[in-house]
Image (cartoon, rainbow, N blue to C red):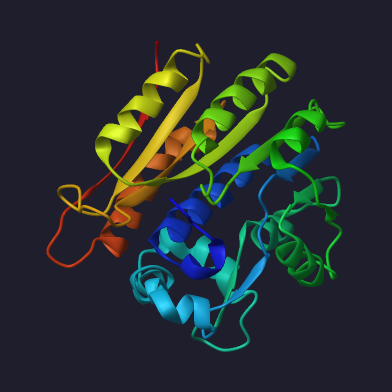
Length: 276
C-alpha cells in the first residue's frame, strides 16, 4: 500500500493522527522536563491543498474541512494548529507532523526530523527553515535506533512511513523491539493505514508477541465493513502513553468520530491495550 503524504494531506487519517499527537505532547509537557521529539518519516512538512496531488484525491474534504465545520471545542487545538499556517479562514495549506511538532516546542524541547526521499527532504528543509528543527536525510529505521536514547530524559519518536515496501510492517516490528530494549520508558507513536481487518489483526498479533508492557492501539475504521481495494481507515500504536493522555482520550475519540464519520456509515474509532 503506497501512502505518500502529499496525496492524502488533510484527510481523516491526518485529522486523527495530528489531534492525538497534539494531545500526547501536551500531556507530556505537563512536566517541565525537556522533551526530544523525533519524526523518522517527516515528509515535506507542509502541503498545498490546492495542489495537484491533494486535488487528485480530494480527501481533505472528508478530513480537515469536516473538522473545521465541526463546532466541538475538543477539536480546537487541532484547528488552531492548522490555522497557524493559513492566513485566511479556510485551510489552503496543511501542516504535516513536523510543522505541528514545531508549534508545540517549548524553549527546552528539541525537534529532530528525518526524510530519506531526496525531493521531499529539500521541501522539508524549506518548510522548516524558520524553526529550530534539525533535519536529517537517512534511512528512517537506522536513524530511529541511532537517536536512542535521546539526550533529554524524555521524548517521543513518531514513525509515519508511506508503507510503499512490502516489508514495512516487519521492519517496524523489528526496529520497535530493538528500540524498546535501548529506551524502555520512551514514548513511540506508530501511524498505519488500515486496508482490511485480517491484515491488521495479524500485525497486532506480531506486536503483541513483543511483550511491550504498555502498548495502546487506536483504530479508526471509516466504514461498517471492509471496502475492497480502498483505504478503510488508519490508526496509531502508542508505546508508553502518559496517564493524562489516556484519561482524556475517550471524549476526544468520540469528537473525532462525530466529525469524520462518512455519510451513511457509523464505522468505529476505539482504543485498546495490546496485552500478551
